[in-house]
Image (spheres, rainbow, N blue to C red):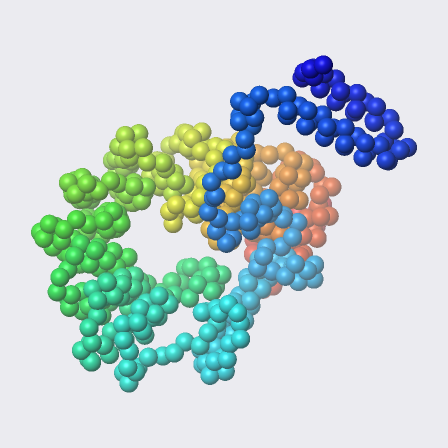
Length: 532
């Protein structure tokens, strides 16, 4: 008798049905069931033709290269933000969780102060940290040797200093080697030029105190961002006998970064006369400083056209940063119609014809261009949301972090429309888009505008349930003016059942007032709470 596929299917069904009713009473039947099924599978394989067997051969895919943190990133992607606990900057403890903006500032700066004290001890007493038993070695925690004029160095030493971004040590190594007349390869000189141009001959800024820098954003030292004229970088550039396009690109990018636009334009013209082909980053930097080189809007646009024509003649294709830099320049045009016209022209050329995918920074610049229009009708935000709704973004431009704050500000100041506000917030909450908010101060501004929109347009129960209970106080603590708007909404809808909670929050938020000169806003809040 030949066993075909129909017989095998029937036999499988009989095995399953017969064992289904006896598995609980007779566990030994599990073994018999497995043996029978294995026999059926073997018979099924024997009855298949060679062609069918060849079709079922398992093909092992090619190995995919994985990074050391890919598994951690995959696991992190499964975890959403915990809105019931404080930010990572604070201790996750009920007694140590800040419940006011003043406490958030104090706790954040206190933590930064502890880091700064530890760094001071490490820098002032390096002899205490010579012994390092950690495996693997962590360069940031190791003793850094200071190189002076008496140290004998070679090319390996200067390459190590460049790799560790020790600018002063690298400069001193170069001076010592030049004094001792030791040879140095052109590649090493180029790497040193890139280092000193990128950091303006200074040590790299400390990235361990970002919170402190965020609070002091309005007190930035402008002199730190000015190029050092006739400094070591220009002297090193002048000492290079055979200057290449890479040499000019490095110096021009450094001049552009530190606001020395006139010299950047000078070296740009010099490179053009020598027939050198510059890279895309250099062209993008020259476009960005167009407002510093030209005064009128017409001359700025003509300058950008000249740069684009040079790019075309050299075969350099524009990229995302080219488009964003041009839009940023257009935001500084005076006439509204003029800026609108050229913004549309840039988008038509770059997006439609060249196929460049916009980033959040692109839409941020578009909002700034059209925000000058005082008309109450502002359809551009609706058009932008129609294009990017439901998309996940990654950081592509430094100005990507400004989009969500600007979009919510525009929605509040121009439209006051809760539907578009909810669409912006859904995009912000999608995937990892919330990481594109930038620092926590941008997040505070974003939620302040979002809260004020909902106070004016949303139902009080929906507002208290979906916004207030969800985000206050761990994510956002309302400012006094915003808190007053919340109370006015409570009073308007006669939702006095929420007043006990708001009264307790008002006490915990610790609004600072002068007892001799109380703030009118705080006084109004106290009156509403006392009357109700």
